Image 1 (cartoon, rainbow, N blue to C red):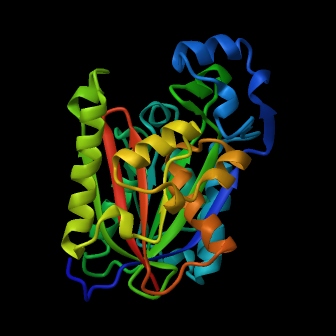
Image 2: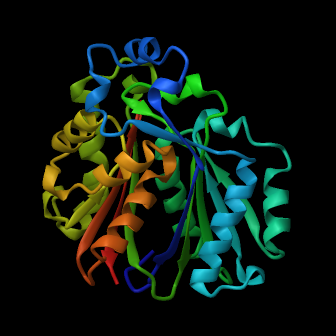
Length: 306
């Protein structure tokens, strides 16, 4: 896809679990944290609470997509594609008629649904790249991207350097003006990480390789972008992941959303971008990065203010 084919993202919307609870409310939390993140103090997490949905995830997806379409002034009948992204474990939790229910409730009568997974919390950035290619198809004008992660069993919320919350985020991809322009995406795989044998070196290599793919064509280094929207992981780990990728601490925007919402899986980068835009404002022609990492993967997207 060439530069003159403008692909813009906008109309970001987020829905968070209405049930806010403390980490200590999870039975056996201290034991679970030690098992998943040994030799770390949860007090450094950056968040003390998590959010849980009180109803079916479909309701929150419908609410979020409806808000995106309303903000983008797009009629449901004019949506051509909808791309869902979720973590591997959550893919198996979706009902067989999930897509049909969502499309029917929203009136997406001409929309083809797609789901993308198997890259853990990097799946939504992989889906962003796929959505970009869908817009290159003749006759496709509006693509909705939806990220959703939810955890039915509270014990499963405690993972390595993360406390998972329930959230849905969505945005609209069009050839018209938006909040940001999508310049490039990249997803890299760390095979050692897929086997649970990743190291500092393997994590750094996959991060640097992916960033080179996304930024290299622009002659940019990670340290030169205005802001970076990362995954809302255990704060010391998030800072470490940024450092090994050549990203400075002052470039990151995540601590506020992390404190308020916890780690929302695939939705983190959209939540952080929308939060930054609301509080500071995306500036025209400045560049931004969305990044995410998971065992075995690193994903990123280069964006420019419109």
